Length: 199
Image (cartoon, rainbow, N blue to C red):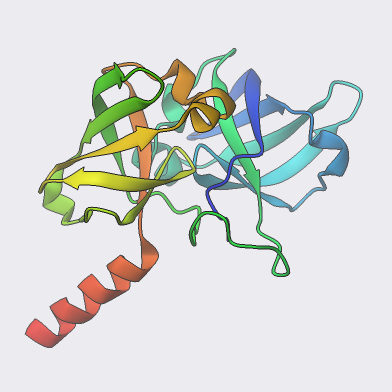
């Protein structure tokens, strides 16, 4: 489990294809604190550390085909920047919201606008999957816990403060870019219960 509070902007330094899987080597300042089998959120995707290279300040994770199909990880290139977060500690404050690291679907950035000290981003997604947002509700975008400022059936906006802009990959995000979305887990359970009762 994660909280959506990003610890580091890391860099992809090597990509290796292996049948339908992709191995990513990630350069990170956290590598000395990592261990094999540890779960880390990469742009909101929970992946397992499979090896570490302390001398090269890097570690390796593997994404299988299903993960690549449902996320933007397949778009990563050598040099790409990604948001990292290690698993939440049970004795720590929950500064973001409950994030599972399981991406529901991707969205496209359709607006990126600076507003004299803050930034507004608008995203559009396929409503056929029936995921929903609500105003003032929580959403995870590329692993970042954010609050929805307005919501439509297939689109929503978020407002970014300067700290979040500087300490996440939002500062690299441009119109047309694809992002990972994880909708609020409580909302997903409520939606599912309503569907069951309606059957």
